[in-house]
Image (cartoon, rainbow, N blue to C red; front, side):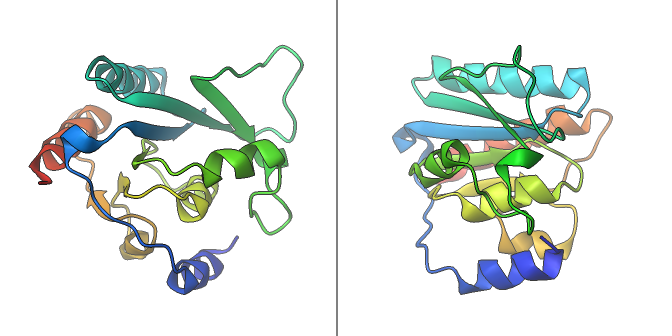
Length: 172
């Protein structure tokens, strides 16, 4: 989808999104792009597993820029996969497994991709998550997330996750 189409869709949505206190969050969807650096992905997984240790149910969703997955790439309950083949020609979710995942009422969605990725914005847009956190890359991002954090510093991903945790803990 073109950014303008995504923004129009975001403006027309009637979903009521609300922030829950951090202690009340039960289930979290963390998304990222498979093309991100190995270091960033490890930091995202570590952050997710820390959330699991604190009693939250975590689902990781990784977007791959493939048209179709090879037979040896399998997902499980914790690590879910999606690819371009899960989206239709205008980049809206089309596969049943992706639609079912996006229909789940997650308490929190965290986009861990710190670069422009239209498919991940589409996932954030179509998700029924109650609250969405994403990176502030441009002003249009305000249509896709309730909380935007500007990645910066020597390690932008680590800084982004630290800031995410800090702000989520401030929600009362």
